[in-house]
Length: 347
Image 1 (spheres, rainbow, N blue to C red):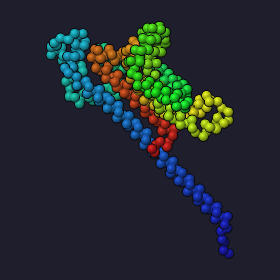
Image 2: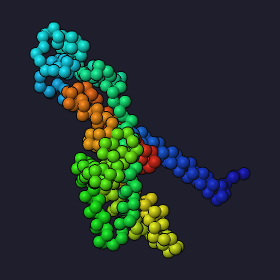
Image 3: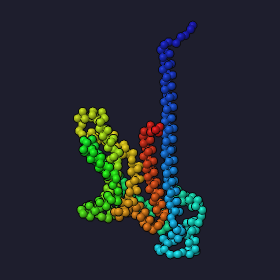
Image 4: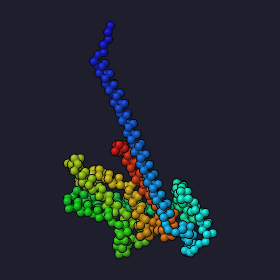
């Protein structure tokens, strides 16, 4: 007796084969995306390592490029006066810092010190550079984070109030963004110090570590950063205002302020978020100047003192630290976006 398959059986077999093929194809796509994501993350980490290596190498070469004998410079720094030194006096310095070793050996020792976290030894203070910097890093990070928070608040309020409000107000807001983004920290800080510190007396002239003394330095860093992020956010904000879901929200009776804060802003701040890594590095770099202007403790004062004393290990240590913070912050932001949206891995 011959058995023939029914149409239902054939359809069931075809459907099962199709489901199996789709599952296999989906699994292959997931593996491809995962491999692309891993490659992108690995590439970002390698790029960050190369950047840090380059910054450290440039800092080392800067020490070698300075004129004069380094042993004599170190001895004069310690003695506090510049006079002729005997070979016997310089021999101890050369031995302590390995200054007579081949350049390649000095370079390897320098990199080893960076990897170990000591960042070398201070010429003047006879201590690891990392200890000196860490003692003053807290005030700098406090200033930096406060400035970033203020810049976000300023940017959100300003863009929400001026973007998409008509040609005149929108143009004025965009011009204010551009002007603020180009303000030099030293010039802006001097203006704020004179107006609000000397004339009005609202804030102390010498910042110190007080909360009241934190606001003017933070505003000095925050205003240019807010202008820069405002430039990146404004165009996206105005484009989002024209989207259909915004029109729908208005038709449902939502007020203009609610539409802007609950819908438009949420979809338009992505460009500013992508700048967060750059903002952290740029703000820390600017903090070095601002701390000196407002007589505020931090790595800025450490750097100025080291430059005046020609204490090169501290100078190079601060430079490498700022480069490291900048690179790591950008790397973290980039990796977060890659993990949030794996489609970026294939771009």
